[in-house]
Image 1 (cartoon, rainbow, N blue to C red):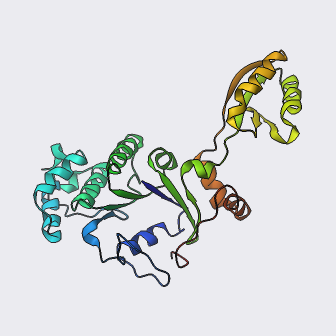
Image 2 (tube, rainbow, N blue to C red):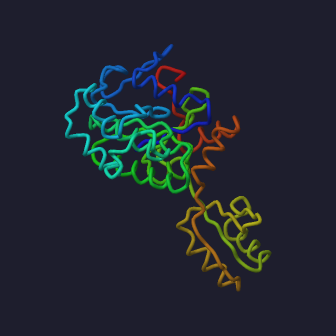
Image 3 (spheres, rainbow, N blue to C red):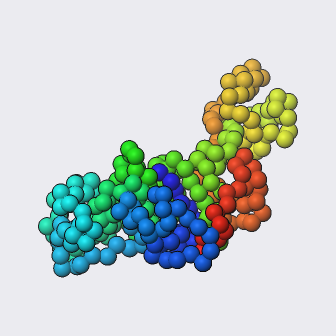
Length: 285
């Protein structure tokens, strides 16, 4: 499961269209399932932008037409309808479907060839909260086994929960790439204690002033989470009440905003625990 992130206009959809052969790159190169883009479509399934089907045909008949075009056995139709939980509505016309059902039928079409690589561009776009949860569960299941899923999404919580690796693109260039844990870097600790002044003085004595930060939510400590027991013991011994002490991981949203919203911050993150990634051959646009 690979999450492909970036602000609007960064080049995500352009990159995906290049990978499936719908656009020709002006420079650079790509390899898709061992071949040039567009040369291995039998092994690739994709849902790029909004799905489009014949409105007057049922979900099943739309898939029959696609299976015929792609030379896919008809037995795959019932399999993919089951995978996306549309079996009960398979006889209904596409025009009667909700947005969430249309998206799921688009995913079913992308699965018809049982692809090695599944490319999904914003599959949760426009869905209500319940639809987002259902799509997230569906995509998580699709990434099990030997299949690779390339997922572009603005739902950062979705990406954080289901993706193994993440790449962030900005103005056609990859600015960071790695696991979610790698992008977050060292977590540190969050601490709430009373009285605050005495707690702050004790923490500075124990950890040094450069490691202790205070804001409205309490203390943030730039130390390895493994020192939590030592810090708790020192504060309690000093007569300070500790009500909260936990790892303080940055969310993927924090990382994304830092990478895409501030050129200086982007450079700082790229120069941090994770080296900046570069797009093969140059710009993705």
